[in-house]
Image (cartoon, rainbow, N blue to C red; front, side, top):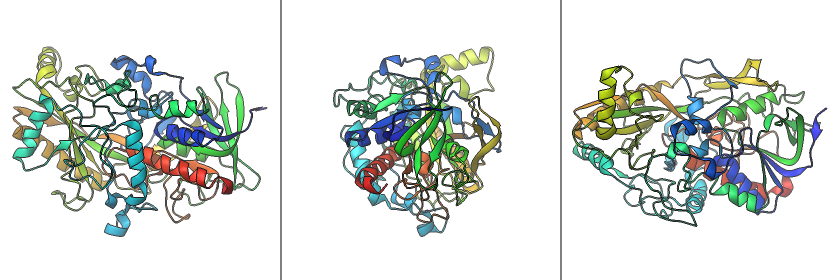
Length: 523
């Protein structure tokens, strides 16, 4: 027998970027909110600037089976515990461009969002004010229309200055990178000390993460957070048209039913689809909200290339933020790639380096070992430069999340991921890899090299769309088939763009949460 809990207005599954925004907005509107997090409880003082500790922030559950030719790097991209993946994100927050919302309408490729950029713009503006973003809207010439950033740009050290030299020589523009990192004190939080430990979660609170912005707001308004709650499925009534709550396993191993007037899934990309597929019943035999057979479909992941190089100059590469110092989106035009690929690209320039961290020096050259590695590490700690190129991935129906034949320790089927980088994405990656080395050499690097393809920012799986026969959700993140079921996070994105997804995930969650408030009586 499952243990039944007291009913709440809204149960939110996941406490990361999207879940924290939903929790704050709904609780501040007077709703009784419960946030269920499968990971551990955590507060800001639990974070340490150490890579060993940083690894505890990453995905820690074996609920995924990767069966495709390419990896989505789930362990790197996902999170575990209060704050989710947004606890260890790097704070690089460009906006999606208007064309990202209209791929099919403009170019006859990919998919369209069910709304355009202008509908999301006010939520971008509100979120950047809430978190305190740093940047320079005028120098960021590619940026879509929107309010100015509330704070001046982040630090540009010698690292960024030297690399910018290469972009200038090759006729490319750079601008301060838009960051959800405080360049000076803001709203009771301290400015960044530029020590380059963003991957460890930022114990000072200068990096915007759920523990310092939206979760405190939610709790102040009465929302409750519960850790160690492993949600297995969404429950529905006899008609199958309304969610009645969720079922989860608590820390004691007990099965618990949490009734709610509305359910919001913000459990990150793969888990959102897995929960819906595991929620199959007589009314929804293929999984909840899956009459269109679209749950799990259109999985996307940005193909990324890291460029590294050695310089004669000391680079001050330990300073700054992990996400970079400068941005270049000169290659964002989707039809101008010199390799003939369709899609956008961007450069994030001057990533802070630690000799032993996840994106560290030794990992860029696995071909060097022994005494040569010691020499390489000593030199690289002061003379290495680093940047990353992020490429757009095309939404392909065959890239998918489905249920695996094996189950996790709670009796729920694991997720099986079948993913291959899109052909256009790989073409963009090859162009970026060559261009990045050229840029480094133009900046004065005596040697430069690209990394193998990596995966960043997992999106899709529960996409929005106007047609219920071809999508899971409408433009409010509301399930077409279950009126009081909503989904948040990058899993709702129909296209990937080439920009980091966290800012858009925040903006979309705020849009959805306000829709819920405005239409509460009809849910």
